[in-house]
Length: 247
Length: 357
Ligand SMILES: Cc1ncc(C[n+]2csc(CCOP(=O)(O)OP(=O)(O)O)c2C)c(N)n1
Ligand code: SF4
Image (cartoon, rainbow over all chains, first blue to last red; front, top):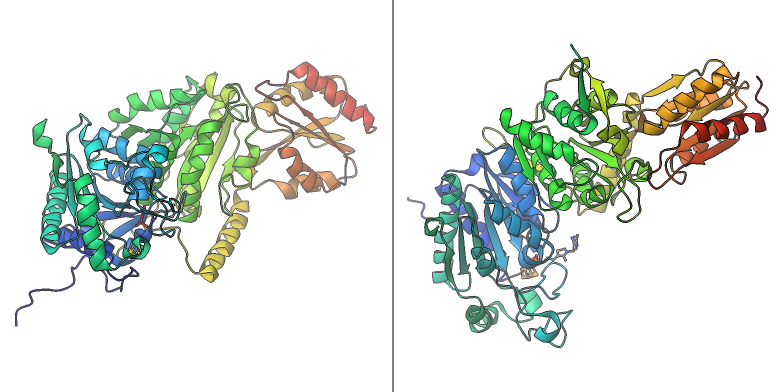
């Protein structure tokens, strides 16, 4: 008998704590598959964020470092600069990366740190119970924007991939989505390319993944995928925003 | 080994390299930016890593990453910068990682000033950031001592898997003094394979973490930290200066101890039997040794001189347990007490409590 599907070697046997339908698990698996395919398990350090995916370290069978809220790119810098032979990636939510950690991500990208960043944009703070994120959509109701995000009061959602692609330092910046099987396959290709750039010592690499949070969006997973497609996709267009070759 | 004349801040940088620390993450702040300037030139020469971070918050997290990766690591800053670093420091303490921090203290609060101060004593000795953690905190009083303690700080941090803080001020960082780097033998780094993020080749995966979702486990961890801080008492260091016959002793550390020494030397000529007890480790505090002097019937009073509103004073009072009166003199805000005003204070305190001549 031939095995055609199994748990990636880079993942542990632990059952995740995520809500039904949550895309964190999907994203974890894609990262783990890429680590396996590139043969990096024994030379990888993952940096876990503060957010729903804080327990990423329980699910990955690689060396892991749990960072302070938003600081994963700085922690990754400390690891990569002192042990350049390791493959170092961060995995961060949108509150973590685009709010409290904005300085760390911009400067890590601008220094051209040879790390990979996987950025989960689910338009909300999941872990703390559904507060507004910098990526929350205009009009979107959250526990701290009960009347819907008022752009006159708090501004528009931040498009991180676009923002990072304005930096002159060579990098790979791409936005994918996890709301359909096709998009998941495309997202994996982007993650693989991002890790490949790091392994080759080419540049900083950044993969934004549009994701869902059915629990705090207050709708079913199926409806969440539809909501993402209808509301997030037009505002957060998918595609490659920057490649190192462009420079 | 021959001595070379060096500015304190640069000597700190060189001491780190001699101790085997060839990675440095920092953010500039007066009065210690020369450490960064020196290491930005020196580290590439020794194949090391220098990164000027976007903030002290980030610098401390880079230190956290590097410490987790099991390399010898140091950063330096001054008071407002150390406040920002307390986030990383708390995580480093929580993840039980070795790392060395140098605080060249300046006057505060807020932006304060840039001149010598001891206003961060509480921050260095009582924790500083959130959670129940401590540094092993050391307060040298000369450029030579600063070099020696920076070099010793690395193996100490590794021995206890805990951040070590070396506390100085603008006087120690900015002045030039002769230094001998050969005084401390560099020690080999401890084996880090069992815990550091070096890549999980031929071993189970390692995790650097400070999260405990189970309160019983977190409590157990806090007890473990408590035991560790108690074990650090083995490292207690202090200097006794003319204590043998003293009827009053002065407690002073770092820069103020230099002034107090000058004052004592002059007052001894006038017949005052005054000594100095100089804590070198300020955490753990040399409480037992100080208490023994406090209990000595010959000693009539104790004096504290520091550049703060009386931060170490609290530890001294606790050490002598009201067995002897404790007099206090301070200059603050960046002003170093001069020998004359110090002598005047010491004369008065000595006479007030019936010291003989
Ligand atoms: C310094 C600090 N501030 C606030 C928090 C509380 N906190 C934990 S997770 C979180 C938001 C996480 O949201 P996001 O990054 O979007 O990730 P998600 O949970 O949606 O995956 C916040 C504010 C914290 N742990 N530390
Ligand atoms: S709260 Fe949202 S982001 Fe967090 S696990 Fe549940 S669905 Fe996922």
